Length: 447
Image 1 (cartoon, rainbow, N blue to C red):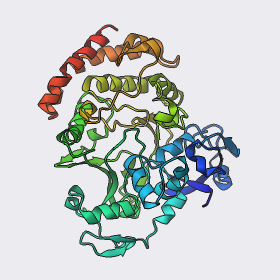
Image 2 (spheres, rainbow, N blue to C red):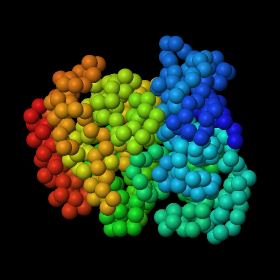
Image 3 (cartoon, one colour):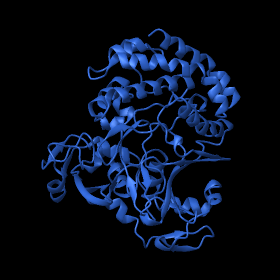
Image 4 (cartoon, rainbow, N blue to C red):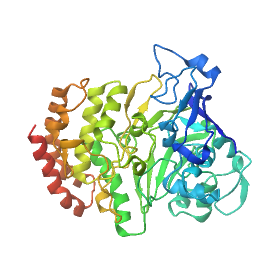
């Protein structure tokens, strides 16, 4: 098996061979050492000491001529390595047993069209235009001739759509530390309204990019959770938090969410912007998954990384803390370090990405505990001491501004039950969250 993977990055309206990683110990997977270097021609064009992140594949990997001997894979690669339901599919497809030794073949096959602006060249090449795929009526055609699917085929998980999606790797590779997570399909819609796997259509034929998300299981709680994810996102928008739903709303169908993607933007001239996206886990340089790491990193570690790279650190920290307040108040316990990301736009402005995977996870039948917590005495039994949190923020953060912003946020929290009702959150969830909402009002009131 090839022990070199080519990392491509999209910017300036084209894909570039940007860097390579070479693994001499592929059996150790992401925990094994590797050599990382930028492609010489790419480095010659994009190295810029004044703007070291321009053209880089990650904030922690500025463009250089150096060959880096790393003890593990670059952290950003774990963002695009198949996991969850996507990993399970590729393991079955490649007839592999799960473990570190499966990571390398999964990367070379399953990272052809992940979210963000990166992809693995070898994985994309496997999904050629001559691949034979089923249509909605079961006919087999070449990928380049495929007519796409109707929305109903997707919503009802029609058998030929599922086969098509799995064969073409449309299942999301986004990392998750939650076991049993339901498939999420990365889809494009053409100008005729038909649906195709991400990476199939040429850019000029794409009308929009979406994530199609199904319930995590077959129970009523699973359906309620997904249905209320759409409502929760409306709540977040009304609270003034950063959401993509403020521009393009999430749509709930009887058994699926259609979520417009914020890492893609279609441009009237037929081109597509693909925004650089990194999880806070990658931003903090953590090349481990939660269990390996001994649990999730603390909020403090993630805030330190955010402050180090954000264009407006204080503004982003305020947003980050508000999100945690709301996560606690509304019972979104699945706050692991890959459920928050940053975006880098073409001008290299770095901000928190819009919220995603924001839902009443406390009702999940499997029971999902709060993942990331504030360090040491800053949090007790799931309740942060917000005064202590502010006191321990990095020096670059304007703490009085943070304190004032959180104090002002109390008025929004007081109106939260009304906002939830208007957003069509289920009545039993509103009732269940009322004590927790009041607890956060009281906690912020002590600032």
